[in-house]
Image 1 (cartoon, one colour):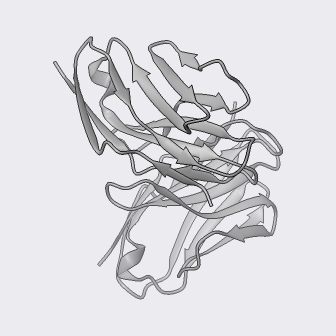
Image 2 (image 1 turned 90 degrees about the vertical axis):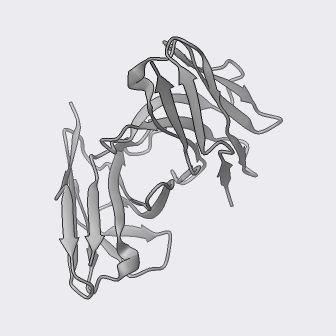
Length: 113
Length: 113
């Protein structure tokens, strides 16, 4: 069975600052994908970033980057130059064979002006 | 381009009434389709997924069922709703046989009275 743990129910950051959201996971499979999704108050699930487990290079999408530590089964999200529009619930998710996504419980991010 | 539609956006139903939520995808063929439920302030839980017409896999035994009567149509149903069925229901799709991320609909907020 796969598990995803987000140990920070809430985080806050000042506008223009950097924040890191933590995620750890557990799986016995060697081939998998990791994702960060953003859910704003509108409740849409928006893909932020994706990491293939076989790639050692950390994924980056503009102001969003990850720190993928495969041995430690850690997958943190760094948001640089935080903007008010970044305020949302952030979910870490793990996908293994069979296309099953396992989500963490989420981290509510507040961005203070 | 591909789009996913879910309806209704909001639904209030009495306990014991039936349920039918619909999800359709446009612009693709034979997508993998998924139904998730999100309890308030929690992560997403996979309920059902389908890789083709009439092929449904259930992840969690419950009061709900799913059907795929057409290639791009996925329906979530219940004969008798329970209070515990309240939540936010999300449909998602991805191209068949791919490792592309899942794309989510806008969701249905279901309240059981």
